[in-house]
Image 1 (tube, helix red, strand yellow):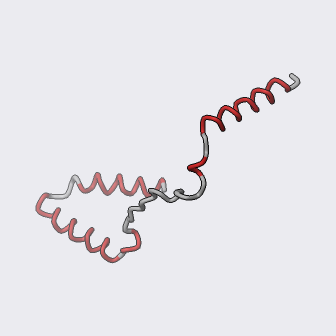
Image 2 (image 1 turned 120 degrees about the vertical axis):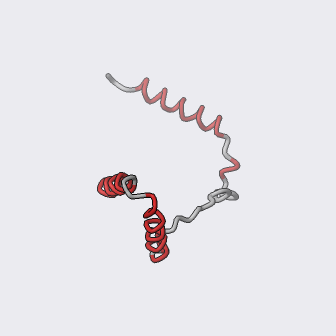
Image 3 (image 1 turned 60 degrees about the horizontal axis):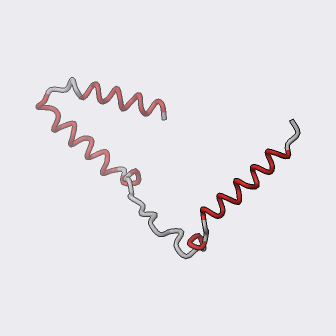
Length: 81
């Protein structure tokens, strides 16, 4: 991944040196490359509601946290130092 970032950085720097009249050609070439490789097209995933109906609605988080804190406190106090 580090090499990918370096390549992108180098390409970006080189793009700034391309004459303005050649930028359309570069854009066309990039579009061509992207059209050939549709597998890398980003897909937006909506994760809203995936845990719905799984029982998490019944959890009382404040009560659970209080219980866990109590257990941890007891455990820490019982340790032999």
